[in-house]
Image (cartoon, rainbow, N blue to C red; front, top):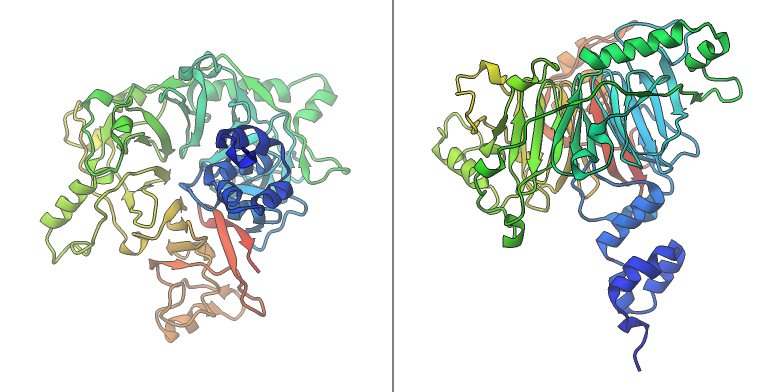
Length: 534
């Protein structure tokens, strides 16, 4: 006689399991081997973790471990100066130039630091002032629930649960973008990703188009300045006071945002990628049916005046000259083969001078499909997934106007930096500060390297680290001369060139096992989301 195990698996995934509490699911999985295997499906737990915790993992290339993280997400820790946000389940972290933004499992945004630290605010000012500091995490009181956050130097771009795009040029007066170009009426106008460049915001649509706008320049700045003037010059004193977004005595840790809708200014749409001119990349491991589909952008990353694009077939592209509304058309899409095609990278290494190229003997995988890109300021990364993952770093890519290539040239043979210690490490995310970097692995390790940046590497107090070790001083003499009895640390340890694992038990009596599932960096700071395994 047929039993429950004979029902189509799709009926469980799309129907029955969606209505069962997790405790019942786990009990169900303990009944026999069949249901144990069914309830170990990564795609199911990825969907369930999005549904229950608002945790998409879209800022990483994670493919496995969703059930493991789900079971431990009840109380994650945020490691930023030992920070704790009581009663809040943080699932995503983003860093701006002088601040942090956290997204919780309910879709609420928490902020701390200062969004615009190049000027100062008065103690009496509210959070309508971009330079108003939040000394501890504060929740933004907004009418939407959010899925993703992306920070530039002095602004943040967010995508809410209904695919609406929001921009924060101050924490007290965020605005939602109202434009026919993002009205969700078609794939061309439905945002799937929102990314902040250093000074601009960008949107990837479902169709693969890229939209760009500059909150601090051009038509958008005019619209923002006009709204600020409207708020600040109102004759209604109660209304004017409300627009200042001052926290109340009853809710001192909540910013009462006076949000508004920006209309009358549209983003610019970048020219389409030259899909028909892009070569088929060898050795990606893609099946023929995937190769036969339309080539389009599926991810973007934004840095200073540039956007890095990634297609569904592994092409890494760059669009430059994004200085403003008047200049953007002087840029163009370029294909970066040395960030896309493993065979071309191998050929480049083989032809290089072994005496000058430290990577000449580096062994690269036989197949490579770039699946993720990240960027900030003047640096970007492209990386693949799996145990044989490759991580390619691009730094200081020349402006398109500065190159001697013909304006219509498609190919840019810009060389990647290949750090041997990051290869084959199952890297799923790379985060970037001004002069320091972090790589998150699928096994829950966070590796950092670069300049000391006031401790942003997270490797510990350099005075306590053994001389000659990563994060420590090069010699005992330098260590002793780096500290002043009254001032404290006046010297900094040398740059860490080899990615080094961060420990999350500094200052504790016993070693504790912790699993890092998220990280963020910008400026001179780094943050991590960590689960306690003990």
